[in-house]
Image (cartoon, rainbow, N blue to C red; front, side, top):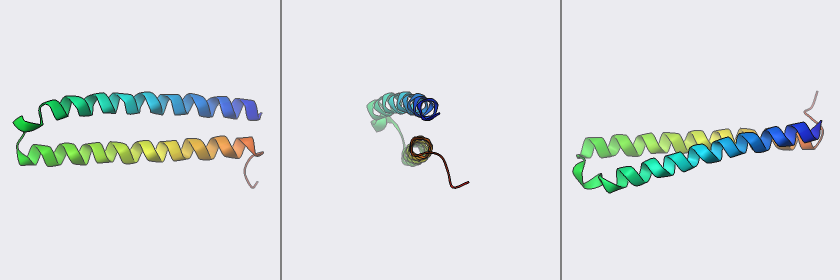
Length: 77
């Protein structure tokens, strides 16, 4: 059972990693046109990237929790 949980955890972690790579690519694109943006657009983009970073960290935390709980034998039930 733990092998299934571990493999699912790795699959989910790989998915989050690919999403993070896409976010980095988007950040590089925004950085290349940063001088063309006005102050309001810059604040909006920074807030959006902070929201994505928070979401990625939350999902990664859930994946790590799931993988470790399966590896040690399940939850408290």
